[in-house]
Length: 214
Image (cartoon, rainbow, N blue to C red; front, top):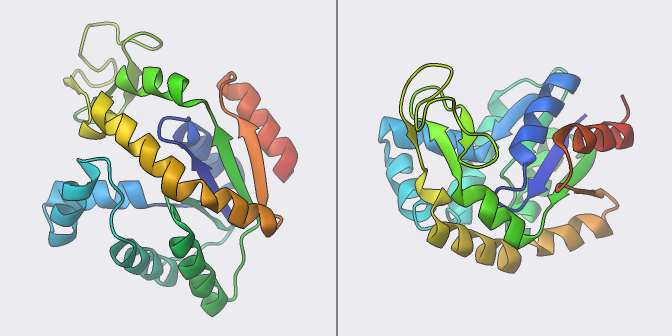
């Protein structure tokens, strides 16, 4: 099973991706994780990515395409994989089709976790992340026991640059301009499955697994 999970920033696709990865024992390919690792190492790719991500912009296609191609060719996928954060533009989708054709593999399904923009802005502006272990909190919906301190490891919580309101609004604008056409692209291919992400997480997960098969 090879999946692509999509959704506007803050729609909850990361939560669903984690559960689906465990449920189906898939290999995770996340461009966001890859770029965060590169930024932490302060590599050349990391420096380039930081310039774009910090402004809520997409990293140029040629850079992202090369990274995904390298990962697809290097790793093994005994039970399949899940793409998370790629493709985000139609051009990237076309590039992905070519990569997969070269490897003789296909996508099983494209899952889109859909949530209204106003809900997403509230979700993301209040999100906080542990500076050490990466655990996620929300100042209203899931606050830590001690203000601004991680429950799990005791390190400070931070607000990521791409969760600042200005960045969120810009990311949603870019999504609507560039990423939404992907929905039509995959709908025409008969691969698209849309699920309402503004429901309890367990219900969203149950709907997705019912569609994919337990």
